[in-house]
Image 1 (tube, rainbow over the protein chains, first blue to last red):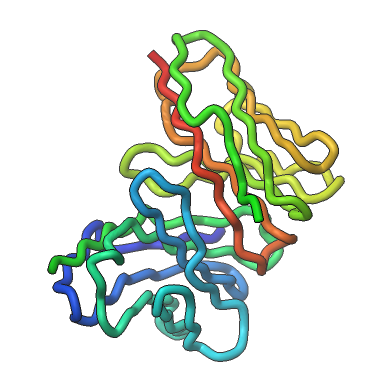
Image 2 (cartoon, rainbow over the protein chains, first blue to last red):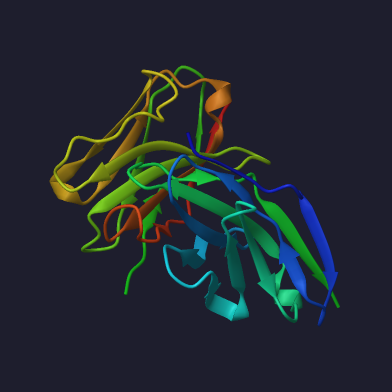
Length: 113
Length: 114
């Protein structure tokens, strides 16, 4: 069975500082990993994904994430946070061969000016 | 191009009534998913359609829930005899294909059962 955990319900950072949103996963095989963002009153938007290859993946809006197989983690990062990055972030995992995608409970990121 | 659309955006219904939620996926996307997002919770997988294959219904919480996808495009999620615990935001997503492709989400339907 596949599962994903986002250990922090809330992350607060100051504008201009680096941000990290944590995600750990559990799968029986090789994972496909995704990050999505949900702005208020809007649907989820795809940010980036790891399928294979380079462990560091770059996505939309300056976000990146690093796949760490030994730690089973896929933390989302951005070097310099913007107030407009404030939103709800979801990590998701899919095990190869499974149809469903497991989402984490979400982490609310607040960037303060 | 047009994204995933869902209707209605909001639905208030009385306990025991049936409701139908509609999803129009992105044209050309063969895969379609339904999820449920309860307040303060992550997304709960409900059902998955891929092309003409039999749907994966493993996430449906009870036999009151069903879904159809007509002509490989539009999908309808039906909840019969609604209960208060069915209140949630129901999200539809579509993608080009299986597993490795990212999903594109609609804005959701907020269902409130009174």
